Length: 159
Image 1 (cartoon, rainbow, N blue to C red):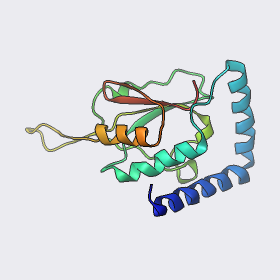
Image 2 (cartoon, rainbow, N blue to C red; image 1 turned 90 degrees about the vertical axis):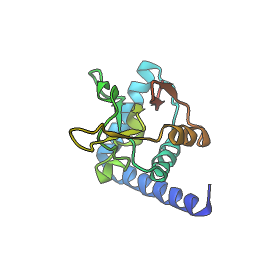
Image 3 (cartoon, rainbow, N blue to C red; image 1 turned 135 degrees about the vertical axis):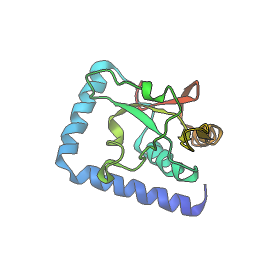
């Protein structure tokens, strides 16, 4: 990791911690999440810094991969069938205060398909941009545990 990357990550981490601290509703949410973790006996697999490093690393790809996620507070089952085919939409890997991902401590799991379908016309097949190898390399470099099945990576916040 280069020096500039380290400065960027430190800056992103400090910014995230600032917003988490100043929003009183976030503190209530954090308490609720802790109660759920204890009740369901979840084990944390990720922490804020690992999530932020992963978010930062997405800028090294040619596109921000699409994802679906489940929050630990979700009551219904999250559908991830939208990843069964190569998506034609991008993921927003920014933090909640930029209207991206929810607060990182609430993510139960994140499913990512690092492929993008680009429409080229009615008579021509869509172009597929595949960042699977690069995405896997990022996860391994950052030592982020994951499961992979049919080009869909599952990253667990809690298990």
